[in-house]
Image 1 (spheres, helix red, strand yellow):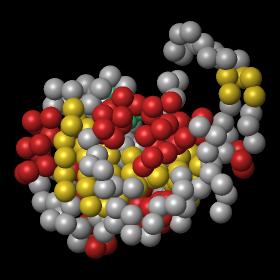
Image 2 (image 1 turned 135 degrees about the vertical axis):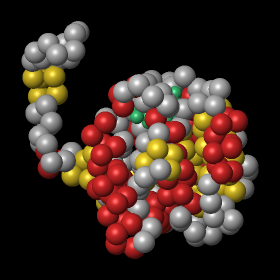
Image 3 (image 1 turned 60 degrees about the vertical axis):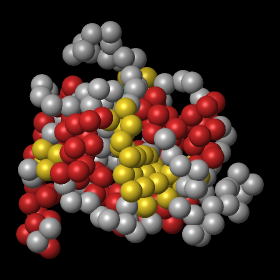
Length: 250
Ligand code: C5P
């Protein structure tokens, strides 16, 4: 075990924080993204159920849009959720980072492992959630589900105006790249320190832990854990749900 590993005991309690305070402008006009329906159920409820599906997760903290806590609370009350899981709703902030921090601030003391899961990834399978928790329990300070890339990726000099041609700066070797998903799992103390220390803008929580100089481990992600960002993603998500209903009467 490396000296930057943590020592979460096998029976450590696990909580999941779900930042759901974004407006989701890339999906087009309408309700906040997390409240959009998928198969007739709000995306956020799918994400909450996906976390609560893991028997290891005993608390789910939902970070609601700043003025949307009452709406999110009544949404949770209106949908069937496992009895063995507790739920908390807290108002979010201006940035994803701030929203996650507000979720962490609301955690009771007796949780040693924290998952951070985007409400925008409603269909992550429970096996992926469990694999992340397992790797944190085994001693990793930060664990991220990830997949190899299908596309080659170019680094560019970004144009000031969308749609303008952009010069390529570099082409990273695709075989060394991974697309990362959530839930990302953390030793709680490490994640709190990362949020207290790192002030740069980041797009995921694990990169804050990297900035502390700690090792972040990747485990295999899942194609159904994709992020619902654009209108076409909603079509794909509906198709995944329809296939699940056919396969197992979900
Ligand atoms: O914008 P993006 O898709 O990266 O957002 C990822 C997640 O962060 C979403 O679930 C979104 O609701 C959440 N978020 C948040 N607070 C913000 C912005 C985004 O909780 N201020």
